[in-house]
Length: 382
Image 1: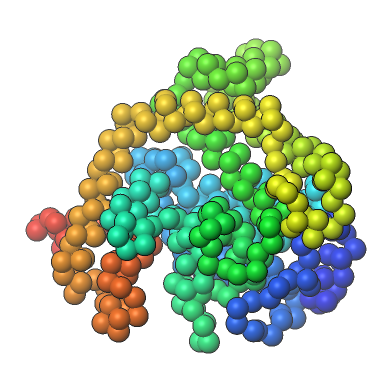
Image 2: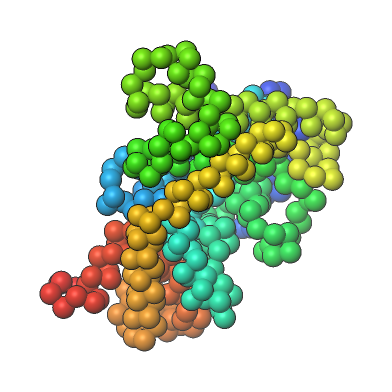
C-alpha cells in the first residue's frame, strides 16, 4: 500500500529534475490537511473531475451545437483529448503527469454555451463591466464559483494548477501573485496539447460534416503530404479509415515534434532544474519552426473554410440571439433568475451583470435553448 509520502518519494526518484514535484508545491490559498493516499496534484485532478463545471462541458459546443449530431466533439471530449495528448508528452519528458492532467482537465471550464461565439457575445455585453474571457472564467470557477466545501468557495486547488489554468492570459492581467518569469513545463505542455487537439479534431469533424473534403485540404502542405503517405501505404483504404489514419498521423507528427523540440531546447538552455525553467528567457516547451508553420497554415485554412462556413455562421447567428435575449430578459427582471443567482444579487455579493454573465456562461447549449424557449415562447411551459 502506498501512502502519499510514498508517492512523493516515487515522484522524486522518477521525475526529471525540471519537473514540478507535488511535495514542492507552493500550497493552496486555504490551508488543508494533506490527503493520506493522494498527492496534492492527484487531489486537484479529482476535484476538477467531480466539479459541476466539468460535467456541464459534456453539452457545450466545440464547433457544432450538441443537437447537430452525437458524433461531433463537445467541450468535454476536447478536454479529454487534450489531457491524453498532454499526459503522453509529459510522460516522455519525465514531467509530472498528475499536474499536467489536472491543468488540462480544468483549462476549459470557463467556456460558455455555443463555443467561442458565446464568449464573444458575453464579452461584448460585459464590455463596460470588466469584459468576459473564458480563461479568466475558468480561474473564477475554480477559485470562487464552485461551491462544495464548508470553509471556502472554489475548489482550493494548488498554486501550480491555478497558474496553469491562468496561463493563457497576458502577464499584465493575472490575479495570482508570485509567478516566476515562466510557467512550469507541465503548463506549457498543456498549452501546446490544446493547439494539437483542437486542430486535429476540427479536421476530423469538418470532414465528417462535409464542411471540408480531402481534396480542398490538400491546399495545406502538411495535409497533402500526410494524405499522400496514407494512400501510398493503403491504396484501397475506405474514406473513413483514410481520414482517421491521416488525422492520427498529424497528431503523432505534432506530438513527436513537441517532444523532440522541447528536449532539444532543454539542452540548449542548459536546464538542470525547475528554477531554470522558471527563469528562462522564453518558454522551453515548443513546436519546431517547421511544425509551427505547418500548424499555423492548417489553422488559417480551417478559419477560412470551416469556422467561416455559412452553415457554422448560421448556427452561430441563432446562438448569438439566444444569449443576447437571455441576458436582456434577466437584466430587465432579475426575479426570473433561479434562487442562487437572485440571492447573490440581493446580497450585493456581486454586481447584477456579473451574476447574469456567470449564470449564462455556466449553461449548456441545450439548457440555454430551453431557457430561451421558456422565456420567449408563450406556448412552452416554464
